[in-house]
Length: 605
Image (cartoon, rainbow, N blue to C red; front, side, top):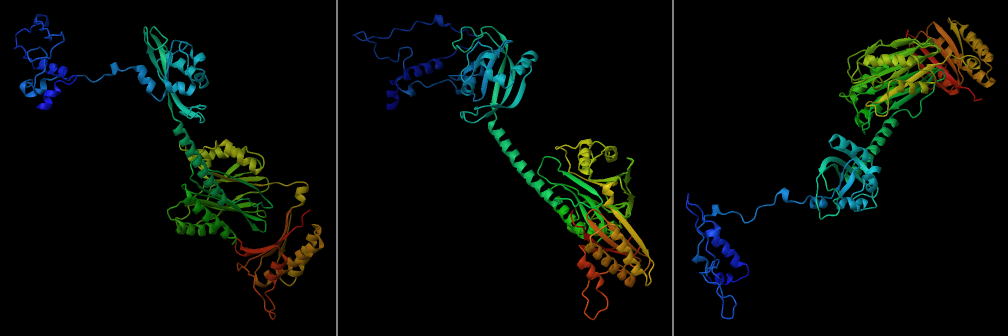
């Protein structure tokens, strides 16, 4: 109570008490007119003291403060009270103050010449103060440099907002003037109304005009984050492509009788690697194996399966097996590696003596062969299921590939499109291949361009082009063939030696190479006479890099090199051949029987 009495004398307390007294006054009954304020009696003059100073207020004085809170209780119910102050509305807020506090860049222009009406503090912090009333081309040259003036013209004409993203502002990254900033600018049509005698001197227009509000939101952090992400993805993609290319041949083997080139282009822009692969394997005796395959899917797993299959193909090729037997071995291996991975493959062998391309396909697209007259044919049969399915016996087919002919092996990324059947892509490849002339590497590039393969293509592409050139003139003098049919008997060996000696002498080989070739032919013929069956044939072949001696017979038992004991009368022929020749080997022939061969490297120059 004592505190209440003293609080009545504190500054401001009297005014609050008077306000409560006014609210506590009884209201007129319903239907009774309220007494206007002019009819109220005038308040009594405040009593004064003898010296003329106003005396202390009393309880009878209008607006006086009661001595205690309990003496005058507030009879008005709580729900009848009205708040002393109302919350502010948007209409009461100052647009100038709001735009001034926004950290984004704000500029307001009006009229067809885009005269400047206002720039906020953030804009001035980045570009410096700008004089009001001037045209944007004069007062806001940075907008012209950013290419926004034509955009502002479009906004003013169409009345629709326009946005440009990620424009670079030199030295405009927030308060750090050493960093370049990036801003997304939005130009919005507005109407700049008359402002009258505005206290702000920056407001230059005094009549309503159509204008444009330029709003620049800083996106420097987002752009830098995106650039870092792109750089990281580029590094990951480079590493993935390096992995993929390291699993492919670093340098293609170049056969004597064929010209070969290949190309690989990774698909898409992500870091996932594909499973496309190719290889060229020299089998000896002038024969060449060509292989191309595709492991479906993308990622390191697909690349790992591809690498294992490619390694296995090279190992199986060394056995010099027919193409369908190589695919049979690959089929079992693919199921063991990963039964969930689907892989296709085509394996082909070219023999210059036969002038044919013998191949087998496991679910792969057909080989295309172009004859010397430009006719393109598909080697489409036979084709088995993809690798890893098991339970299928693959078969081999053949297609002519003589001098002057070319062939292309490829993966589905070259011809497959989402909106077209794959046959349309193969037909387009046939047309492109028919007109693609030049060396094999040039043909690869022309096929990529003709089929519309670019760096953004969404699938991996592998192409292998081979050409069997028709040689004339001096080049033709470096390639020769000679064959002799042997019918057995005691005269077979002397005939073979005489034939080999005469042929090698006509080819003008050095004496040492001549003698080694005659010795190798004699030993291979003697081995065939002892362990083989007729018919027998001796074939000599010369290329620009090697001499090949080959003997065929009707027995399919393959010889092997073994150590002969001193007392043995046989078993030294193959060891002698393996010692004097650069390489040797044997294989079974398609019609039954075998072929045993050896090679001698010719001296350079």
